[in-house]
Amino acid sequence: MNILVLDDEKEIADLVELYLKNENYEVYKFYTANEAIHCIDTVKLDLAILDVMIAGKNGFEICEYIREKNLNFPIIMLTAKIEEKDKVTGLLIGADDYITKPFLPMELVARVKAALRRYTKYNEMLKEEIYIDGLEIHAETHECLLYEQPIDLTPLEFEILLYLANHRASVVSSEELFEKVWKEKYLENNNTVMVHIRRIREKLRRRYQKSKIY
Image (cartoon, rainbow, N blue to C red):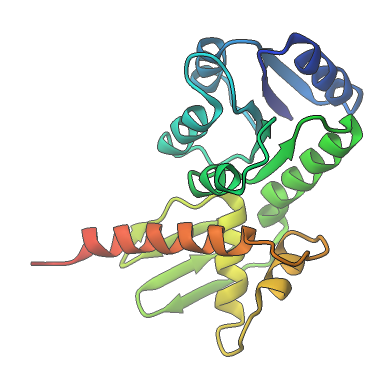
């Protein structure tokens, strides 16, 4: 699998590359935003690791650029910042995970593997189609449509919506949703779930407005 690594701290980028290559990933490592953007435009990537505080276009802007191109591979943000608002910003524009510097390389590898498992999981799903008031969810093809118009969801967003749709007759708590989709233990004061749901709602709202007939 092809992984983009962008960090202007050479030592960190080199270390991440080393650990990922030891796991037999193909690594495209860059120290500048322009080089990374060229790679995004020319290489079929499976995951991106982006430093937030990069010169030129910062990590947030590159994350946004990826999503605007309708590329749905997972994005992990690396940051020295610990403010909650920065994490929320990243999640709202399409990031899948956050790792704060300094970090343990093996923790990063574990996060990469978890994100890639989520990304490829839909290929192993049983055939399943859900129809709810104009919303169509096709699990086998990983497609989501609203009034026959496609909704561009990241793999994580798709899993969240699919789980909620399959349990629409029940009340699903943030804890349950996090543990079923992320496959990790839920921690108190974790607003990751609500940030992703807010983003899904915004995508559905925009598509609904475009689909309205005046």
